Length: 280
Image 1 (cartoon, rainbow, N blue to C red):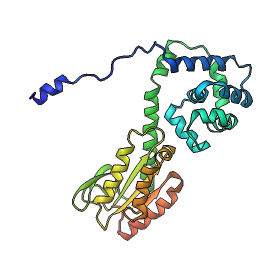
Image 2: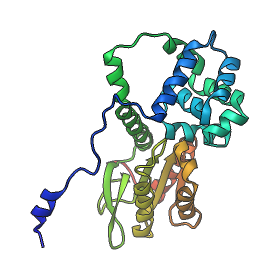
Image 3: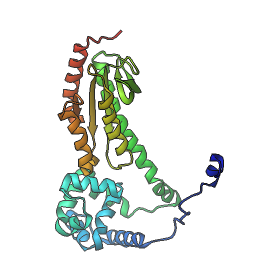
Image 4: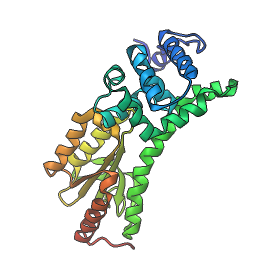
């Protein structure tokens, strides 16, 4: 049997490097679609809807997503939210006008397309485009911090002491939380989870698990709240329902979105009053 160090030394890459300049079938379809967009005499809702309907396999829908800076998963989540279905071919075939209208209302599609399609791009632009996934990851992190910042500001506005991004002690174990009042560890009396899910599901399992863990270890005297938002959850309804069931069964005390933060503030203030919690 090899030692642990030998095992680690034997680890290798599971994927080989791919030349980014080589085109695959998807790349060729995107390039052809882009050439078609550039050739349109004018950019209008009608001309775009007709163009989308002509593209094979719903390719035009994905290309319009790229125009406004959306990954495929982010675009699918957006279409599910706005049009009721994430399927590119269905949108192109059955509702191209509605698709264009929705993307114009949400992302200013027409002006973005007009400003980009005739522009000359240099090597730096190519590298920036390849770094796009990193930029998306940054925006996803910013979305998560938005929820955390909002709940922190509410705690501040109520004059309550708190600690962010910590663990709290429950009955027989500890669990992670994004906000603990008045502090983390054994001092925690109110704990809050803030979980956003805008486009990627990479951290979804952790989000659900953490909230379930909070509900499991809580003491009877502790309050547990969850602030959850992002249209990506609509694509993982069963996971969202697991958290909702914790709320409906009384295992956590509240579940909120950004739109219902006013109710969260009221419930947090009420919990703090019950616990006689005041700022030092």
